[in-house]
Image (tube, rainbow, N blue to C red; front, top):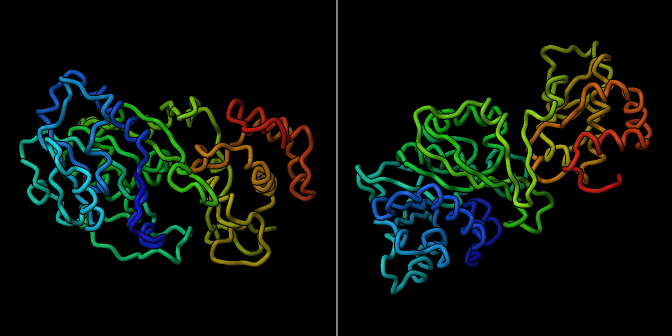
Length: 380
């Protein structure tokens, strides 16, 4: 059920992009598979950003005598109008959820959310993920929001994950940006969460499901976590096989990335003005490359100074930008990929292609080989 009571700016700031039924079904299938040997009546179910309550109703085709319902269901949202709609949706239900109008990131504790201290807790849902520091639609974003100090992050979704850890949920099955896992800086920012949870199952979907008219799409992971003091390290993520909705699979360790070979961010403290032969715009990831410039002529705060021995590698990134239409959405938060040995064989060709804006058949073939089955068309 899509939300109908918020305008574009309100939806952006609340992260209110409601979840289609088929995604809710995937979440429940993952969760029920993990809980197949337990009695659901021993668990409390919480959606702390419940919206209209989609995630608090198990799909009918998954219900049976064994997993009929949870002992208690709780829905929390900061949006009072959404909660009113949720209450209407469960009118007359046999086991209706307890709906609470609260900020789920403030005063985070079980008592405040009506959860018994000894309850086995399952958290489900699609919490907001709005990077308050991102340049995307930045002018529309309200950067002031109340959150417990221990949960403060630049992204609301990361704060929600930390809140789930604070509540000591036994199982968590939620949607969140894939970047929380695959970007090492994000993973480290969430080290408190990942130190206490293991990833049991996952599926990657596109943000296009929620924002089909967006200028660009990013990968979202449906992730099933179980509380485990062993946690996971970043090496686990690098070796994990990520599965997509369209039956593709990839592993980070299958690729080399450009960050191994060049500076992606301003480097003026290490490279002097006299050493540079060119400048490049800051490079965050593939999706940022879709939006940003490559080589720049005017110095600025986001300028990366290029030394002669690295010039050809920045030419490579410039050429990579020209084939982005062939790169699938699920690589959007990755670094630019490179086959360094293959690049060295074609190094002069990449410099020439960057200057001429024409891609030779050899370069086209290089990218087809680089992406393999992930290459999204047979031509450039």
